[in-house]
Length: 253
Image (tube, rainbow, N blue to C red):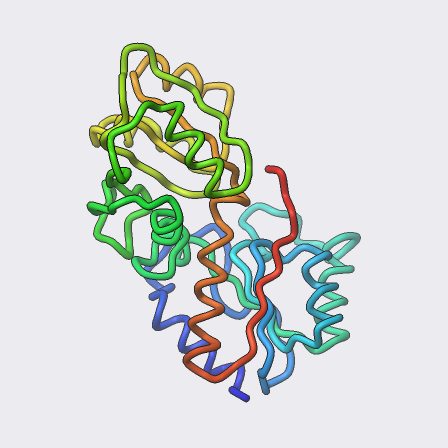
């Protein structure tokens, strides 16, 4: 068993969360019991994930997408009340890490996506590894965009939407940022990438890809961000002798 505050401090140090100007609160969002033996992790602190935590007897829920986002309604009503009531009534802690978990050079979503896809990472276009969010690298070999899209889909277990750039040719240099980072496509092109991978697509993304001349692969917000929180949970479990269970609540987005 570990003390809740010890785990919070360990994550803060590991992820250096204080360096990030984020859209939400990183760290402990809802306080539960002090002693932690079981950690349940998932991408988003949805009601379905909380119900799994209660059923398993988790002491702490660890997520990438927690609560208290900037500009969200502050009233504790409806869905928000039900979620908070589940945590408070069962004395369960909720910890969430957003941008710090995207950026981390070892456990982060971008680092884990590179490992899953077999990419060699060369650094970040917008900062040092551990700080930057737009990662640069190369696939295992030069390949057509269609082949890369098939590879990404097979690795993530979902179909990848591909917008091909006319005349761009094969992919040798790739950029990626997990989640809803489709608007980084211009920065990816400026960094010299042949293809950019992220989790979502907007109407404008298609035109940007075609007119800039960079292939765009939409691989799913949820699908690209499953591995960071799982890696953080595994690290916590190994460091403090805890039980850890990752629960993947299916999400097609």
